[in-house]
Image: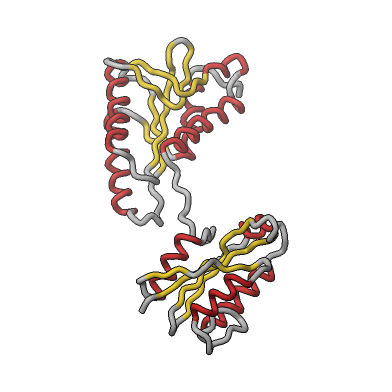
Length: 277
């Protein structure tokens, strides 16, 4: 049986005709399914008013759907198409429906599909995963914190970001470097919260190897963000993380968690008598 769907929208100012999706309805001649937002903060900021009436409407519409009705006060004796067409055309206040559209999917499958496409529900969004750029910013931020708090004023300019360190065959840019003409130590960030392209992983291996061949005692730290335990591919990501960090260590780099970066920097700077503590 063919299904249809419509998007329920909030229009705080019908004259401006600006709208935001708040719910979806999927139906055929026998079933009605509805789904609304669970987090209304985005809608509240959009309309700049209390949205309690929208929440109450969503609850009433959900209850009506359980009775086979499209909306509160619906006439169950008229065809669904006629009933929804009427409210799509005649509803002129701040709650409006889009014109119904058809689908070959069953009602339940259709509801799931349109909800994922048309509803921006902050409660259901995937958590943010920090990428390589986030790891780089975090690494340099940790270095800056140390320099702001502990480093002598005449040595603060020694902190360099995105700075090149010479290796045996090439020069390599690290996220954070302490240098005074010659580099004193370097750190680079990497994130396993997201999948790392193979070429970037190999590039990081080469950075460590090449610099260590030229300067075996040069301190290199890799700040590695481990994979999140709630990730869909956690086991695979965790295995990649363990293999990669083990390789970093074998190549001569110090593998750090984000909470360890500052203490590592402080320990290294103390040896150079650069701290005012």
